[in-house]
Image 1: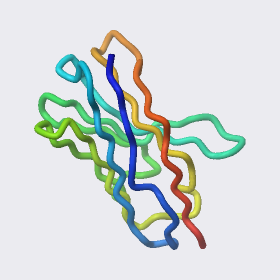
Image 2: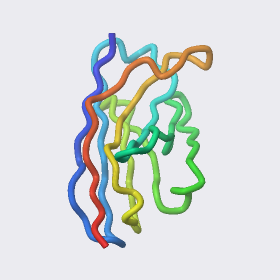
Image 3: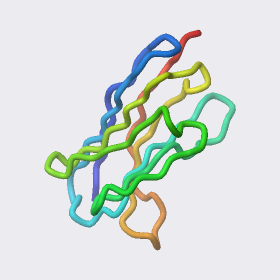
Length: 119
């Protein structure tokens, strides 16, 4: 089993920055990729960014490219999401999730952290 704990959410003005953290514990040696997803009221959960543990290869949703950066610290089993130039439409609960291979879905999920961007 893998446990994921997010932190770093909060309230920020438009144009501001936040850094989210996702700390993984348990059977982390088998993880392939960790990603960030978000969900706002009345909308479906959407992909934000993901990173591969082995080489740091990252992917992003078009809506956050150039503003968000995902990174990882293998020694700390932690993934970060640096969010710059935040917009009100970035307001959502952000979830960290992990998968064990390309053949599996995101099986492990954190409890989520609220990000609110005021205009």
